[in-house]
Length: 199
Image 1: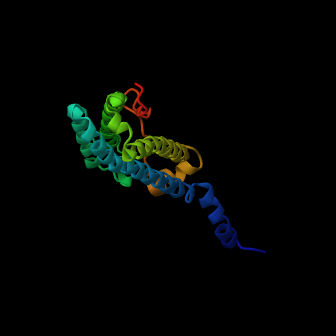
Image 2: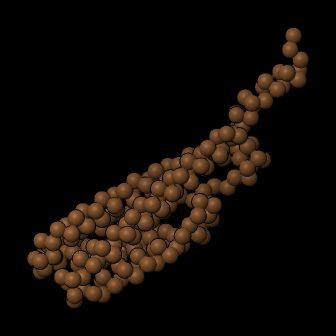
């Protein structure tokens, strides 16, 4: 007959598993990985903007103000960095979101620049312009998908650390704090800018 000690030792892994010992860090790491995808998507967009701006700049000198605004917003968006450990800090998340939203807003202005493309037929026919425009539109879609996936992972993690029995491990073992979902703080920032010549 097994001793009480053996029964306890056999039951311990099941008890610990039921208390979220493995679930909490697994969900946290998933959310952090999704955040890395968000950062990569924003960085890819930031890398595309100067190329598109350079192509448009040559054909639209009088729109220099809009181009300057886009380039400055891109510089600010890339200067605000957020580490995975900062995902529980609402202030740092708000600063990052504000910088990214400023670039989204500026790209809206850039869309207005491109809406005037009919006045610049030489720009419309430039292959690089067409390719970069398509890439930027695709990148805005990838950003939306990455943000949706990150917010889903955050929701799963936050639910895990607040529900029984996982809350036991979350509080006692890990001292887990809720992560901050990404929210668009600028009205319409979640919508990709129009780059197809329409406002």
